[in-house]
Structures are given as structure tokens and as C-alpha cells.
Length: 288
Length: 120
Image (cartoon, rainbow over all chains, first blue to last red; front, side, top):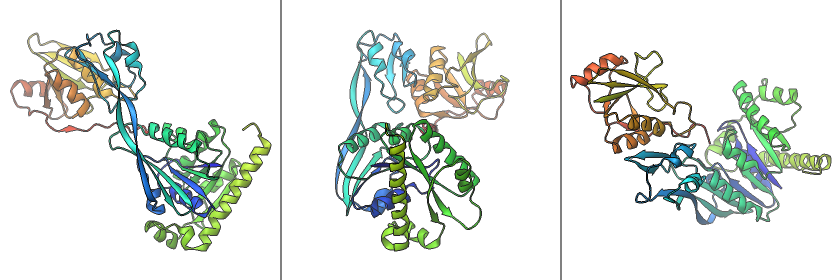
């Protein structure tokens, strides 16, 4: 079972939820798809790390062949090519390597090269396999790294796979949840939190994913995110309290469910809730 | 000599953004003519500076007056031999005058751009 953990903005508790769900499972694989700022490894502290580099295709112009016709420039929707002194020049950091310039060039002056954009690290942390993607600084898109990681996930036989998504609801998040069987939306108890929750709520509906909400930083006072869930009939999978002990443990990069059994219980219950919700979903919508 | 300036819709004030300005003023110091060109880069998702710089290069301007400039745009402009000068204040006419009197400094502080804020 593949569980993706999302939120409309950073800092709501995606990694807290992802790492702890992986930790309380008997066996799990944790995929950190937040490739711009992966931090799950800080908690899981994986050993025996193997690194692989991720490359993307990158166009290169042969200046001797280029006759300055500008067909590649007119084609490029990302404005990654400019004509300088009547020769096409590629700006690799703006390029989303679609290969179009190579196809449209009548002089065959554009050819494909490979360019490293980041790496994927595989390691182990007790019962958890840890797979973290890391995008190089200044690169435009982490999608190729996420795509490579999820290709790996297809061949992974671990019974539970947790996908720690990037924040927001843009391409990188869509890519991350493509293969997920269930989505967890983590939400903060504020009006702003509701706005962010709504972004990912809309996204998982577009993708027809079964989902539920984990309310984080819960106080005794009223919780706008909880009210939103009730109003929209969204299942609430669990409530993580806003407490000092949790904050301290987490800030010291400890896995709270391993340190304090009350948190262990909390995350085991969330995992049970999800299994139940996913089973119900499977029986209601067997085509999924 | 042709001087390019990113200008606001009112055509009297300089636009703080090079890549996302709505238009460019091209001023010809010999004929004293002012011409306005639309910036096709304004609504682009990315690469706006590159597209905007291409407009200036194709117009064969020799000088750009702007408050700042991103690195991709600067690369295109500098490769085409266009000199960058830093504008002072917002007035288009004051800056044209100041440049012709040699009162403006060359723009050397090229910023790394504002790319990738769409979270794509």
C-alpha cells in the first residue's frame, strides 16, 4: 500500500507524520519526494547509503551548423533559447527538456546531451528503507528526480510505502501522488491552514484519490480545519496535539513515536484508520 | 545611438522589473524619436528576462537603462554588446538626460533572477 502525505504549505507536519507512520509499521519504505528540501533522513538517520545521480536531457547547439533561423526559439515555450549574434544559445536552468528544439531545427544543429540535476540516496534505518531525492541548487524542476524515485517504488516489494510529498499542489506534488493508493492531508488549526488544506483537498479530488485528514498542532480551542472537514464530510484520521514535549523531541530530530509510547499509539491508530478507509474504498470502488 | 528603458504604462516612469515590464522605450539620440515596444515576456511563465532581452537585442539598441537586471537577461544583452547603466529615480526623461551627460553608473550588480516561484 502506497500512502502519500501532503499539505498546502511547508511546516504543517508532513515529515512528522510520514516518518512516524513508517516507524510504527512492521516494515516500510519511506520516500522523501520533497526534493528541494528533503529532511526525513534527519529523523530516520539511514545507514549504508548508496547514491545514484539523476540526469536530464539537455539541448546543445552546434554553432557551426546553426544558421540563426530561430525556429527553435519560436518553438520554446519556456524561453530557454535566445539568439545571440545570430546563433541560438540555450539557457539550461530555464529549460524543461522537452526535446522540441531538436525536432524543429531544420539544420540538425541541436543535439541532446545529459546533465546531472540531483541525486537519490538509498539507505536503511531499522525496519525502514529510506529513499531520499535531492535536487541540486538552482535547478528549475524536481519532477525528473521524483519520477525516477517512483519508478523505483514500482519494483519495491515492501508492504507499506510512505511518500513524503513536497508542499503545495503544483507539478511536483501531482507527480508524487500519481501512484498513491491513499492520501493523507496534514492541516493546521488556523484560517490560513484551512486555505492550504483546501488546495490539496481540491487536488486529491481531481486525481480521484481516497483521502483523509490528520489535524496537527491541535489545541483545546476551536479548530477551523476540523470545522472544514466536518462541513465537507472529510474523514479525520487522527489529531496530533500541540504540545511542548513533542516539539522538543521533533526539534532534536527524534522520532516521537519511538521515544514516547503515547505517540506510538497515536500513529498506530492513524495507520489502522487508513487501512480501514482504504479497504472500505476498495470495496466501494473496486475498479481503483 | 539607441537607448532602451523598461517603462510603465504611463510611459513617463521606469519599470523596476526588466523582464516583466509591459513595454520598452527605445530612444534614438540622433533623431530624438521615442518608440515603444511591447514586451512579449510579460506574461511568460518563465524565461521572461531572456525573451525581453531578445526584444532589445533585435532592436539593435546599444544601451539599456534599468534599475536592475537578472543574470539570464544580462547574459543575452552583454553577449550582444549592449551596455547596462543603472537608472536613478523613476523619471524616464531625467534618466535619458543624465545618461547623455555621462552621469549614470554602469550596472554591475546583476541579481540571480526570481525564477521558480511557481513551485513547478
